[in-house]
Amino acid sequence: MKHPEKSLSKDEALKKAKRIDQLRTYLPVVGLVVIFVLFIFLTNGKMIAPKNLILLLNQVYVVMIAAMGVFFIMTMGGLDFSQGSILGIASIVICLLSPYSIPLAIAGGIFAGACIGAINAYFHVRRKIASFIVTICTMFLFRGFIKYFASDSPVRASMNVYDFDHIEFKLTCTILIVLVGFLAFRFTPFGTYLKAIGAGERGAMFAGIRTDRMKFFIYTLAGALTGFAAFINIVKNGSATANVGNQLETQILIALVLGGMPISGGAKVRFGNIIVGSLLYYVLYSGLTMIGLTTQELQLVEGVIFLIFVAVFADRKALKVIK
Image (cartoon, rainbow, N blue to C red; front, side):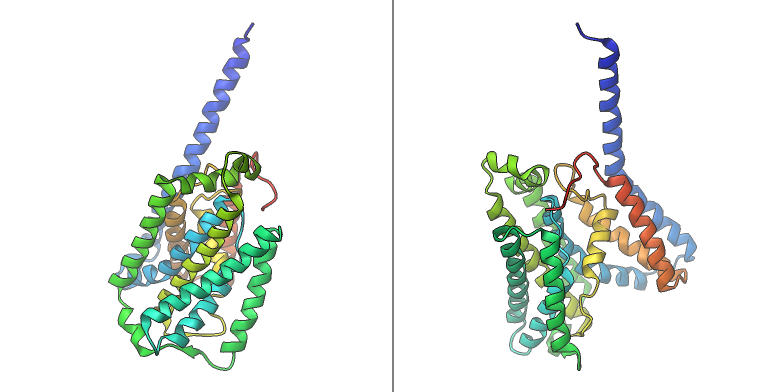
């Protein structure tokens, strides 16, 4: 015989879980709008000045493109801390190849990023080393190469790269890449496979998904995307310094979490986490900078907000050791 009280409690629990999921879905979007409007008033309208909006977009392009690869990795339940070093190595390759041909430089940057992503994939997938350990090691390894090549003086690109330094090119590239990623993630088995691996790799294997092949491909793809983001970075800066790409991995992680990305990945991830998170991170960063916060104060505020969002979006039932 069924007990009405137990049935009622189950219904209430389901309704509560649904409300929490809705909160996790809409909170980042609401947060983006509220923070943007707030900083418009706090900066006396400077936030929406055309010059500052263009500067904001210039900062978003690189992170949004690179964040898409990390988003795919985190959907599978992994992490990647090597993105800054990938951007640095790819930037140096692009600078060295740019005097010969810009298309060759772009291809070289993408290839360099894909190679480092494949190295991460090999040690994680084939050697069964946890993703965060592998990518931390490659982060330091390739950061050393960057310091070696660019410590004495910046590696300068050909002046031809400045021909691409206009908003139409950078915005079009970003929109196309994000659109292709969205269509693949939302309307093909690709996204379903990634979510299945994040929800439970063993179950995904039993369902017929070739998890090792998928993971190897995703880490390589993430490197290739960051390799292209390096070209956008060089277009903006014109050279690669010893600090190129420094802290990119931290910026990406904070941006994704601010966008509502669950740390454990799985079925609750949304592609919008990339777009909303990247915009929210740089609106917050630019706004805090405009109102005169020092670097230390800015990092303190960002850290507090990051902790709050992690607490809100962490799925404690699914949370486990990162793969």
